[in-house]
Length: 563
Image (cartoon, rainbow, N blue to C red; front, side, top):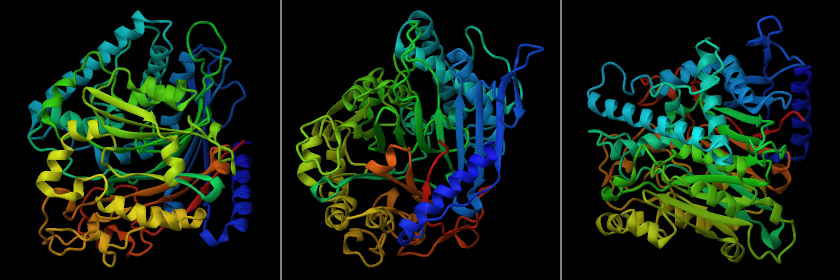
């Protein structure tokens, strides 16, 4: 049954290729791996079996196509015949069952040396462990104190899913019926990658992972002329060791709360780009059954006086807040209101929330509620409706610089401009200028992809770096290629140096695609105007990159899902 469903996906792709052949789209149909989590009739315990079973609590359909397309694909479905808690736990269990090999490789590639037995900064690692443990304990207390709260009900389900993922990977299934613990240095680290970047500063880590000015993603919301369509796109910027990717779709049959109402969860179905071991996107880029598309780029915080707001109690880490908001919100403003609660001051981002329920192709009399922008730093969250600005300008670009003046100044960006110049400014940053110049050329899917993969740093004057030698810089583009900067160059700050870092993907959706949770996606560093990234010939060939293809020259694919 499931194997036939994968054939259906390929057939749909063939139809799409005929209509969009100019994009060079393709789909690699690998062998599907199916697992079902069921209740064993003899023991009454949850167990995992091969294939699809009608009485499933949760089932997973997984295809590893990384060698062909740069992506693997995972669909998880849960059954409303069981209570939400066992569904959530089972969802984690079946994900581990089909992705355990990739989880192992991704851990080895990205986390094996982090706070391991031979780290030099062991005192920081102890502080981090204590912080995470205290935060988990505080959340468990809130879950127990507020059993009717939709927020804490969903937070509980998220933690159960994470528990199931870790138990499933370790082959130690034991559904928790009461208070349960999560390993503070286990798979929660997969979820907390962005949070940990800021916790390193807040907890005084001696050497920090993120260099000054390091970009983390580009995003573009683009209205076509006469509102013919609305494109939403995102490039992840990341270390190249993190390029084991899974495109995921979750269909969870949870209720919104424990109140007894059978109201379905607004964002119960989600499609998103993700990673092995992660139960959220992390990029972030989501298409939701509520009609919302949510995405972010990181803005960070350079004001050390704000780290006092980062505390283990009274806060929920960013990764979990965005899952809860994605599940519960029905409007863009409601998403912002839910997300702003329990601000952790970690993984500080600019979030863009697009509500396709308020968009009709060709309709121009849109007033508000289509588009909201939120920014977070420690101690402060600001958001507002930006529909009219999107309509007036025809686009919204996001490139790791805060938009709101209050956030810009409070986070220390004004001081960075004074010290390093306009590279840190909202209007004169290289990507701001490239987006402003090139977004007018976007007229269809092909031109949108071309812009989001754009990096012509050797020829484009807007990619020039003041104070750099050589002046051309691979960081200064929509999709960065910092690996191509010379190792012996001179640079004013760390982000502009040669690094194993750059744009590692592109995702985009449209009014037509989002309704089917569809998107176009490209995996790996851009090679449109530049040579493809190749591990064996790069300066980083000795970095651990288990499971990676050697050459990253993948073309765009159309992501579709089983009905």
